[in-house]
Length: 145
Ligand code: DCP
Image (cartoon, rainbow, N blue to C red; front, side):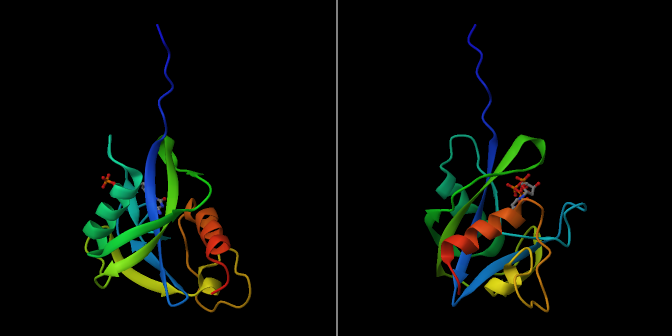
């Protein structure tokens, strides 16, 4: 019998950026994640392309139309065998609104977004665990704002 290792289930998230700012979303559920911030996204369904899942999730959760631009190098472990991957995303139309899963949105500067507070950031973002290294990689890719 052939043993096949089940691939990690992918959660894809978007680094939506513009005007030198990155979009952060505050989760409203589940209770253990509520109040923490993330790059918005969700699970890739079986058979679905990662980019298509991202476009779908951002449409459902924020009411925006987007185009994935580039995969951010790296992948970050999540609970229950999931893995976080991130794409930079261009906002094509719509104004992001927290339609589901979130109760607040923030466009943050690079210094506010920086997980380890590079420089003075009066109001740093309390990212979810996996998003901290992911945001670091996003900022490295996008460069200084
Ligand atoms: N997650 C994360 N950081 C992100 C996005 C997601 O840590 N930037 C985590 C939170 C959850 C898991 O990944 O533990 C799945 O994310 P979602 O609940 O947002 O995914 P879905 O909306 O697809 O889940 P469901 O279909 O269960 O509602």
